[in-house]
Image (cartoon, rainbow, N blue to C red):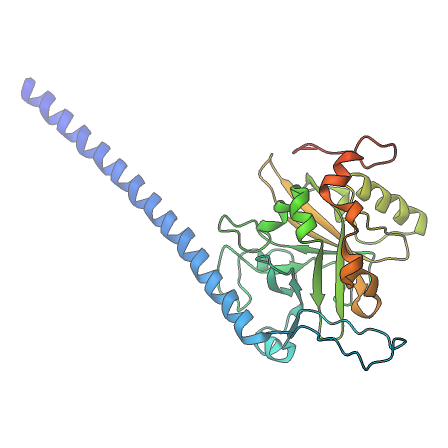
Length: 300
């Protein structure tokens, strides 16, 4: 009888050890798969930056130019779109934010699923690719152009968008650039906030100027803080969206005004980028003022 019990216990221990070993192997594989995916994605996108992105030299003063000559502004980078199109014909543009991890090609696919888990070259990878919503036009002609990117734990893709919860981060990085084969745009940020996956922020066109004006007013009022950037129904905007983990189906979005770089002199001039009275510290002194957009919590 005792011998039978010992055999039973030994058999049970073998089964449990087998289960634990299986769980350990599966967990180890998952970790390897995740971190190897991070490594492969970083390698691929670093390679794209090295091959197709050129840094623009800083402009030097030219005293001999007459004062009435208009200033010409350029983006800090240029993109070889001909080369990119040879790699992927679905490339739509390039999104860039100076001194941040964001410098990626943007694609527009046949649906909003494929590029969630495929790299720019079409390889299966959990980092995916920054992509434009299929309802949007690559010429940015609709009211609201929407770009999606994963929130990767290694701070890849659009993970750094959540840094805009901190006003100091906004002060250091108030604009994005969006480059296309035909035009370069400056994207000054006018709002950023936590929302849900079914939020009205993902509306892309409006029937009337009045509807659009109400939408812009609502989006501005929901911002974590006031950036001072004004938008009107005459403007087109771009929404950058990534996952957040505050609650199920949470998203963090950053909304930008789209300005062709030839019209962005007042934004790009050093003296006009951030007036002294518009720093985080000075805005904090005025948060109780009437008309200031309300602060939101981590969850809506």
